[in-house]
Image (cartoon, rainbow over all chains, first blue to last red; front, side):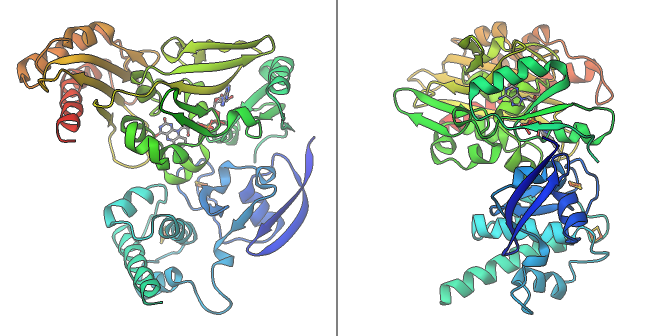
Length: 162
Length: 293
Ligand SMILES: Cc1cc2nc3c(=O)[nH]c(=O)nc-3n(C[C@H](O)[C@H](O)[C@H](O)COP(=O)(O)OP(=O)(O)OC[C@H]3O[C@@H](n4cnc5c(N)ncnc54)[C@H](O)[C@@H]3O)c2cc1C
Ligand code: FES
Ligand code: FES
């Protein structure tokens, strides 16, 4: 088959679509659904600008077919905010100035969120290692890593208070 | 854009083997796709048929028991391995290896079976599996066969898999309750790097805590395929691992067994120089991990 019908949940909305089987998940999100938050940097798994969460796990959407996402739950940067309220990590990237041109930022934030979800409160060194698949050509990494660390700390603190 | 192809999702091993046979060189098996799709993006490669094996039950899951040891489905991802409680506790050398594959994103898709079947001399999952004496469960149209991982590779990007065969699982006995393991990846930078050279070590010692009773050393990018260096391993048996000179001599021996090629990454002499220094160092790291346990 050259085309296939897939059904999946993206940012809390259900979609049923027919897609060409050679379409990557990234092309599907950007070109078919107009979700242009995830970026195409390299198309070969090196830069992480295309990172989205598939069933909670960060993946390079340029190295995955849309049909492989059939039945899964996808979160992109567009679905991260809760209405008008930004996710703490999004807010922190703004407050800490961890953004310059912003091209890498959606990927950085999605990976950062996934790391906080999976590891709770990882050390700065662990964050550095876990974010090695996200390249940035302008801000550099120090602020990004510190911002993820700070957000993890405050999210843990807030959940302790509850 | 990836060139047009026909996409198949076999539900059983039998179907997968028949498809692989039927489509031959116009088809490709895909697990995580981190190698295959990256290659297809470059425009120089194309296949008419993609055979996605991820849905086949036998390819999935990590099984472990005290009696049988560890069995990894070929479609198990690097990240599943690095997060598995028993593997992180008892198979640390494997975790050390797979943790260095690409990035978290790549490890969430890339599989151990893909790492093996790509047959790259640099594969980070393979050396640790070699020193754990792993064997491959292979399925073909005629049935199943078992091949030791050490005999799986026949050349760069070449394996013993026949035109109808797929790798189903890779399995290994439990390591000794006390062993030292270490994985060393040499690259020019820390992140996102294909190994210029890698070394895996597994060792056991006598009750005196220093006489070597078992030594297994695997090298990556030091020969056309990942290799074990049996002569060097043999040399270590009975040696005092606290004796720096004796350990260093292992480095002189290992370069007799290695045959690295020159590539744009590094020339052969440089790789040999590295091996002479880094093999003894990795043996020491493995020994330290055992003593400091
Ligand atoms: C950005 C990036 C960085 C990388 N960094 C590293 C690294 O640091 N270290 C490293 O070792 N690798 C690295 N790789 C290579 C790759 O990610 C790994 O080798 C991975 O384990 C491949 O698994 P996969 O499931 O994605 O393979 P796939 O792409 O699905 O398949 C790879 C090959 O194996 C064959 N195959 C897969 N499964 C089977 C099976 N069960 N039976 C028969 N044939 C099969 C396929 O036909 C194909 O030829 C990197 C790749 C990328 C894109
Ligand atoms: S565009 Fe996917 S990793 Fe660069
Ligand atoms: S902010 Fe420009 S690439 Fe990272």
